Amino acid sequence: MSRTRFRLAGATIALLLAAVAGCSGGEGVDVDGNDTAGAGGVLNAAIGGEPDQLDPHKTSAYYSFQVLENVFDTLVEPDANLEMKPALATEWTTSEDQLTWTFTLREGVKFSDGTPLTAEDVVYSYNRIIDEKLNNAYKFGTVKSIEATDPKTVVVTLNAPTPNLLANLGGFKGVAIVQKANVESGEITTKPVGSGPFAVENYSSGDSIRLVRNDNYWGEKPKLDGVRFTFVSDPTVALQNLRGGEVHWTDNLPPQQVPALLDGDDPTVQSVPSTDYWYLALNQARKPYDDVNVRRAIAFALDREAITKAAKFGLATVNQTAIPQNSAFYYEYAPYTHDVNQAKQLLDQAGVSGLTMDLMVTSEYPETVTAAQVIASQLEAVGITVEIRTLDFAQWLDEQGAGKFDSFMLGWLGNIDPDEFYYAQHHSDGTFNFHKYANPNVDRLLDQARTETDQAARKQQYDQVAKQIVDDASYIYLYNPDVAQGWSKQVSGYEVRTDRAIRFRDVALAR
Image: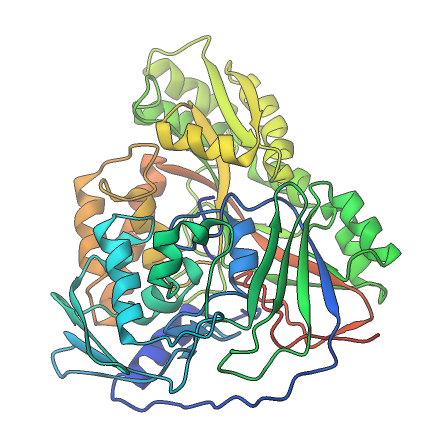
């Protein structure tokens, strides 16, 4: 999905930036694990759909990353407050000109098959993403070279200062450190080898993925013996299974029932604001959606409050920009009121009438189907007939990649730095710019902002980006959803995160 990616209520991106500044002088933190395994047991987790594959560098599906969060490591990783903390790297320093970053790797790290993980694996992983122009290549846009100066030292040389480098290298598992032999054998798509707390034992397509505790893990050994991910697309069934004891954890809860579940205590259900956003995109490579008046007309025709209420039952905040209100980079701008007359006038100016619009959604994200029905009703009022096309997610991704759509609705998940909200989606060369938006001013601002070290100036640049994208209706933003997850009384040590990172390494299961 458009996603990724991939934190507690009230956390701000400013905390991340403080973390970058705090570590730039070379003050590292070394956290040693211990070898004590916990009480054991296998946690049964129900997720809403099946991963398309398990290669972290090639998948863009959230269902994949729910699994991979527990299998792979990154150099650094965000804690619950969005601060980047040590993971495979225990410390890092930057040169005075901020163009050279030196990372020191943790001692004794091994992949789950027992082979050592060294600086060469880091270099291989990053160069693979760059050289093969994989999904996250844009995160390395300012990287000049990556070098292993010894088995425990990685030197990243930049061609421009990059204030969000730590977020790029550790924000989510799409930039995980992989094993070359696992990639070259082709097994990484179904049986990846990582250095995380769990290892993939079995992948039964259409049914489940079984993880086992990685006894070679460098950190504190997980208390669980393993985790079994089952694919349950129907949220009502997932909740029934949770209540019936068939599963211990799920994030696929019926949204209309979450408010009541939050007031109960069995199962435990918690909800926090997320860093996600959901949106409608129009294909600007197709007429008449190349006309900004048509796109703006659709933006005026939508009643976001009604869409959000139908799709999320109050578990979301309406927003006409991407970045949520609890971020230091939030830009308050909402030019589109629900105005049918204004929408009709803009369509008249564009010379468009009797338009039939294909709207592509996916059954694996039910809120897109629900929202599409409301959108169709609202656009009918301005003379646009919406034909909803519901696909499984794998086919949805294929159609998106091939540009075979008039419009689609989906979300971007787990964003940290403002660059992640905008660059890949709206830069004319962006990896995920499937709707073919191009504005030279936006390109210029995005290129400047990702290398701007003055945070006030950077905020101003992203404000300009946000305004222009909204004015151009590149994406028609709808809402920022909350994260709602539930688990049984047997589960302890689990934390709901606003980046939707599903981490089971500290979880215990009472038996």
